[in-house]
Image 1 (cartoon, rainbow, N blue to C red):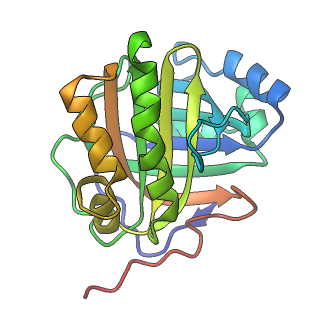
Image 2: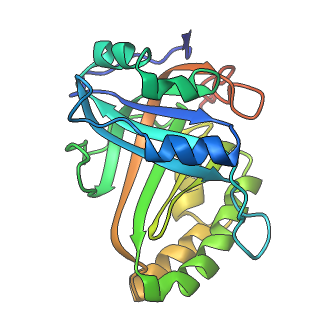
Length: 242
C-alpha cells in the first residue's frame, strides 16, 4: 500500500474505497453482476459496481467499456483489509485502489451512509470527486448535451489528474475524477474556468436531469496499483500556497 505523502487521517465514521480494474468487456460485465453484497461482507456498509467508460472528448458519449469499478463504504480499515481477499475482490487485484476519507457531501444516495455535510479543510490537498445520478429517461438528451462540455473541460484543466465515466444501465450514471487540489477542483466546478460545468449546473437547475443525485468529495490517504499505467496520486504533493 502506497501512503500518499503528508495526508493526516482525520477522525471519521468509516472510510470509502475506490477499486478500478481495466479489464475487457466480458469480464467487466461479470464483475458488475457479481459485486459484493453488504449483507454478506463483514464491515461493508455500501457497495456499487460500475462499468468504466472514457470521459468525453467529442460531441457524443463514448460507448467503449474500459473496465469495472467498485465504490464502497466501510466500518473501518480492518474491514476493508479483510475484503481484499474476498472472491469478489479478485478482479481488482491488478488494478488501482484508493482509501478515502469523505470530506464533503451534497445530495443523498440510497444505501450510502450519512457522510459529512460541512466541508473539512482540504484546499491544498489532492481530492477524489464522485458524482452519481439516476437520470430521468425523458431528460437523457439534454443531460448528455450538457455533460459533454463539462467532461471535455475537465480533461483539459491543468489540475485534472485522471477521470472516468461510470455507467450502470439503464439509468444510473456517475463520474469519478482526481484533482491536484480541492481549491483547483472548485475553480473548475463553480468558477469561470473553463465554464462547461457551471453551464451544466445552470441547465440542471432550470429543469432537473435527475431523480436522485449525490456529490461526494473525498480525501485519498492511501493508494495502490495502477490506473492508465500509473498511480495518478502516487507522486502528488500539496500545491504551494500562493
